[in-house]
Image 1 (tube, rainbow, N blue to C red):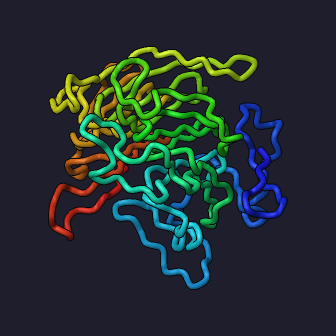
Image 2: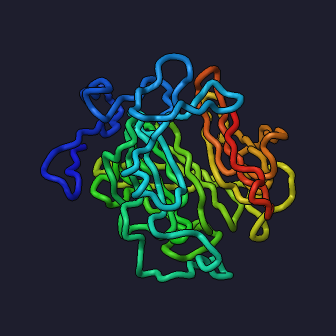
Length: 349
């Protein structure tokens, strides 16, 4: 993909577009020669292993070790210039080169005025976010690609599949999108859900939260979400002309009300994030307000529930890596409390 950076002279930034046959695409040059780097195995993006040599940042403070982990935070990442462009953060994913792709809300925040009692968007529907909402950030913390202005209203989460396609959810629009690598021509390849219309049938969502995509990209899951408490699996085929044919395969976990509060298997109280572990034939769900991760077979059959004491009462996101025999990463959230010194979000492996 060749992209002319908006607002700059005609200098081209080259990206591998994620095609399956990697041999046909030149590998990026080594770090130090370019700001775009290829992901070597399982990469942690902005988080580096403590052993070995840390990047040498001029005037940087010492890296902060993460408790209970051999990981440490890379100091001064992202750059100040990048930070200044970020609004309320909603999601982050890693592309096939190890760059971070951030989905943020620009000038919008989610507050009591954002939605009406019927879950419809409560603000002006003719005023999308005017800033670029999808930013690709390299290892030095600099933005190398940005897009998404005047397209979204309340971003939620982002997923990058094995072909570098980008999947996004917008809870205000009640829609799910698939775009080509780095946004392509900014025309979505897939749009699911009806714009601004919440619902619980096969053609509608109600504040969908996340997407997980199979390695071959022929199937994907959507967690839906704040109102419907269900997970839906789809199959997708692509015609020779590039048209995506999406078919719903099945769903599970749908509640009878806005939230399913029963703590049994298959019930969710806001399925907020998804992690696909195909080598284990499992799909795991961050069951947010139940404070647990529920895992299921790829056909939606319950396999196990994970709820250690360290999770607390809320789990916001979950991710999986094949590294070290398979690891599940989860991010908890603050407890409901008026105490300003109360528990802060923490990550767990």
